Image (cartoon, rainbow, N blue to C red; front, top):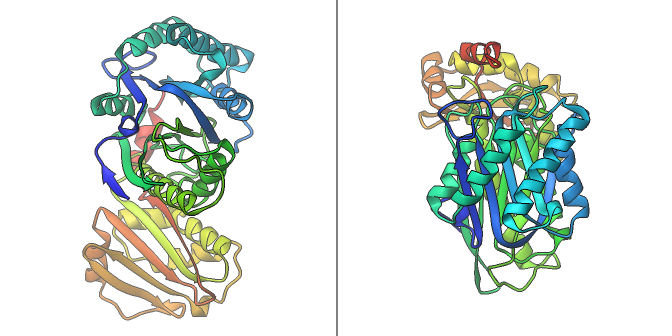
Length: 407
């Protein structure tokens, strides 16, 4: 497996575009399309929030009941959440418009929205945007990059990646893009994420691969503890690579899952590091835990701790906050067995040994914590399981951005 240029359009048969439709924003791209020249199988994972946006309900129905899909239409600025029956009619109007222009079935059109909850979509601008997208779409790397930019809201940069591998003697590509900066606390999964592949794989295994990957990637990030109403991750497979269809959990399936996990981990970390107002990606790796689930729970408890996030922002080696966050995770452990380290490109230092303060240099610790990517390492000394979670520091700018979000 190797990383290659591009994102969604690095995958054979997939086209994209990003255009300005003035849904909410001015002078920026705010609508995107993903289109495959042939129908694709689609898997999906969606928010666990009881309040689900209309696009989530629309897409879930297509994932569960449609034999295939062929296009995705996405807008930013307005979430089409909290819009009742009218919100579902907006999805239907989008799908109908795209269906007519692309010559594909209406139930082959997925939709996505992100932005302010409770506002209604301006369907005249949305439909005009779809017309522009259909004309503009193409398979170039630049077109994929435009689409990645067009799905951003408070993100500071587009997030995309593509990898290449060999399955059954055929070159296969997995490429994707995502957006997410605030209201990030997946369970599954707080974001919009779109991953495509030209691999031939059964729909059942496609869904299984995505659901398994989400557990250790998107579900292990948090920016602010808020689980969105619009969380959607779609995995699309058009089969154009020409490999023998993967219908069982063989070596090809394992290799595909590794590539998918690499793409999803990259996108998850990019979202965590681009949290609203963030200055640092904050990773926690818990190892020697008793079970995998306990390792995940402990790691997420640390990266979700506002006090720890604030300490990361202040470059403060306040290991007590880390130990405290482990303690309220509801995982049972002996605090007098726990070791805590911090690590970055500037070095590694042990802050806590067997539950008490280790003899360390505050100046050295501050230097390590001043890097743009910081990792907390926790040795539980209880077993052999490991898990990582990703978040970001908590800054003054997070409050500023969210205080002024609607204006």
